[in-house]
Length: 266
Image (tube, rainbow, N blue to C red; front, side, top):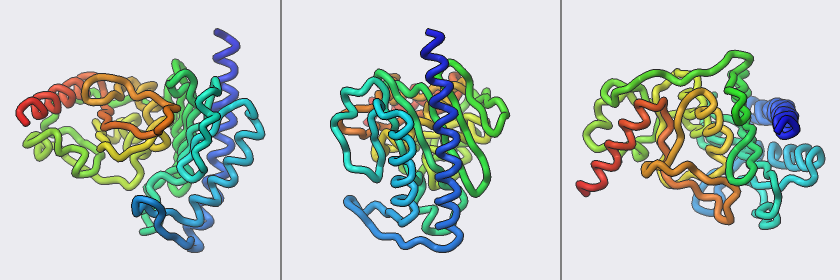
C-alpha cells in the first residue's frame, strides 16, 4: 500500500510539472492569437489544443511508458484498456471560451487505475491556479487545502453549470444562482474550493472533461455521481460520461432527489 501511495504521489508531481509547462504553451497562443477550426460534431479546436496535446503526449508517456493514453485530441488507442494505469488528458477544456478570449479555460490531466482517478490536476494558466488531488490525499489549490461548501438547500444555492444541465431540476432550477463557466473542469474545481455550492453536467461530457476535476471535488469532501447515485467509471472503450452532479453531501443528496422526482413525473 505504501508503494502505491508513493507511486501516486510521484505521478501527481509529474502531472503538476507537465501541466504548468503546458499552461505556458497555451497561454502564449492565447496572447498571440491561435488559429481555430471545427472538428467532428461541430466542436471547436485550436492550434493551442494541438500544441498542448503534442507536448503532453511526448512528455508523459516518456516518463511512464507502461501507462495508457486517452486524450481529446489524440487518436483513441484501444491498447490503453489493458494498461493498469492510464493518463486521461484534456489539452484545453473550454476551447470555446479560449477562442472568445475568456480566462476560464483549463488544462486537465488525470491518472486512472481500475476505473477510478488516483491523481489529478486542473490548471488555469491565466489565473495561475493549480488544483490538484490524489486519492485519499486531499485536494489543494496553490498550497491551500480545499473544502466544499456546507450548503444543504437547492433554493439559493450557487451553481456553476450550463443552462441545459440544470433543466432536470425543473422549477427549482430558477431558485439557484447560476453562473456559466466555459470549462466544465473549472466549474468542478471551483465547487471543490467552495466558490460555488454545486455543478451539474449534461450528457455530452467525456472522461477527459471530469476525471481530474471529479477527483478534486471528492477529495475536497464532495460527492460526484450520476443522478442515480452511481459513480462515474473511467478508461472505458467509449469515453462518454453520462450527466453528473457534483456538490457537498447534503446538497448532492437534495439535487439527486429532485432530479429523480422530476424524472418520475415526466
